[in-house]
Length: 392
Image 1 (tube, rainbow, N blue to C red):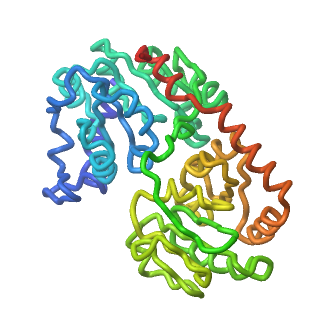
Image 2: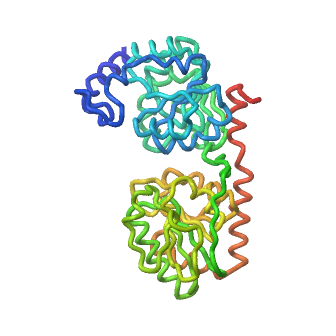
Image 3: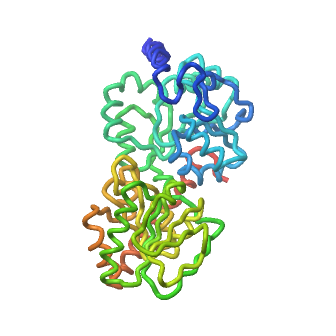
């Protein structure tokens, strides 16, 4: 009864959802009709992997690679779908149908997935009920339950427990595992955070820096963070006159909007940085992960301004580089804690960087501690594959 009430409420709210407006209003190629479509012939007899949006689409890369040819992907947002199609062009993908019971029941009957993997924790009641009825195993991989979600799930435990009691929850942390048990998941195991299994880039971007210089790389920056990078550069230049600041905006189109207070070079124009260049702007796509290897310190963007949540620091840690994040790294706080990555306020950053760059002993210990923590935590993909019966 509650499930039908949920479906009725969801149907009534559909016109107000920003991602599925009525009247055939489009975002990309997405209309309301695509939410009710249940066809997915390319996904038949495959493992169905569901991700939420853009960030999650990137995080599942190790798992998609490991399940190459066996997996099809569903995404909640149209922006996420665009990202998935770009990242995994050979993997079948589509939007997840609207979570109304008859719709998802039909979708699963037509698609006949071997298993359903839900990345992190998106609980779709109708999908879970239909999968349970059709005997399709469901796994929550790299599962997490935030403070806010935990409170809501506990209130709905009587409703949720029959839907998740047969599902397997493969938790990121012991804390997430304990919460999953309280919510009603019957089988819970801790495997770690899939974000830790980011692979090193296959193609290495080249960069030639003239002279012996301290190099700061600000990766995936957002509005407000470039200005912070300029201020930090100015203060550190008093102690390190030849310091070089490299900035890679998260959205490349913003690169031309930046106005650094010093001589500037752009990645699209040159791969050689002369001694008199203060700022190097990375206005190309897909090179940041390998450029991190040229840094003395990597500073992760999206974490010094609210509302973003930060970006994955592991791409920098892979190169055994010291990494610093801001206080607003909510989406990656657990990863930062596991890898002993410090989180700093804006005003703390210049002094922290000065001390780090001035003291070789502290610098080397920082690199060793972070990298050794990473080595202990990696291997999440293998643990997930073993748990879902797909290893080898």
